Structure formats: structure tokens, C-alpha cells
View 1 (cartoon, rainbow, N blue to C red):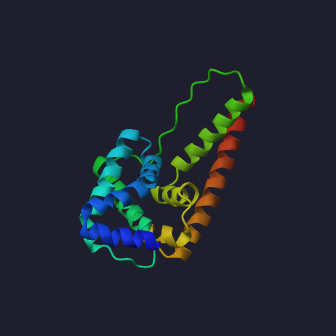
View 2: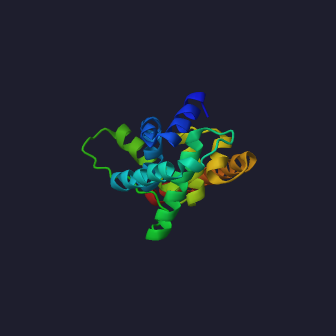
View 3: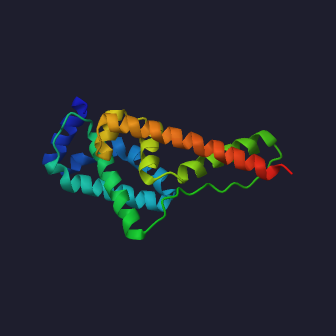
Length: 185
């Protein structure tokens, strides 16, 4: 945790209105993380609000353990999402962006299809594997921080990430192979 974060946290423990600075600093990252998991602006806004409400409510019990304050917020976000999925029995799939082709530009359409294939392949991964990809490649968090958020050791995160990338590569290769088979006569 930066010294600035440490000072803000201590100030916010004494003066809850000071929590606003921490909120402003991290709301974008937490919202982005939640949005990537839900695919819904409305749900992401609601769940982000819950994360910061819980953070403010439990701030007095927060203690620095050698990780950034953001790791604590991401852990809360992880728990809020887990509860949200469990309570609503949502599927583990990430929603796909709907694409309406209005252009005849083949390159653009191919790029859109490739992106959709990757999104579908990621959506078929377990929620845990989706989360490790999101934290590593979207949020660009270090392995240690991801481990804290996911309740795993740094080595376990590296192993999970390696297995996930391997599974994703296999899934994409199979998808490409199946796609080519369905196109050929």
C-alpha cells in the first residue's frame, strides 16, 4: 500500500467522509472488474456500490498486511460477485457483445469474429479461470495481489494462470478446427 493510501485509510477510519478520496481513486478499477464479470452496466453499478458500502462499513477492521489497499477492495468485490452469482443462479458465462454488421469491410468483420471466438472460449472457462485472466490481463495485477484476492498462494496463481492459458489455447484451436470443418464441403 502506498504511503498516501495508508494515510487516507487512517484518516477515513476517523472521518468517514475522507473515504471519498479512496472511493474516487479506486471506483473505476473496481467497476471495470465487476463489469467484465457481469457484462451489465446496471449490475456493475449496483455491485460496485455494494463493494464500497462494505468497504466503508468494515474499514475499522482493515489492517495492512503488506498488500495494497486495492487488494482488499478486490477481495470484497470477489466476494460480492460470488454472492451475487449464487443468489441469482446466474450461469458462469460472460455475455457476448452483439455485433450488427453494417460495413462491408471484411477485415473488420474478421477481427470482430476473432474477438467473439475468444470471448466465447473465455466464457466456457470456469468462473475461477475467468477471474484469474481478468485480474492478470485486464486489471494487470501482480501474482501476489491476485493470490490475495483469490485466497491462493502466488505459486498457485501462477500455476492456475498457466493451466488456464493452456486450456484457452486448446479451446481456441478446437473452435478454429470445428469452424473450418463446418465451412468445408
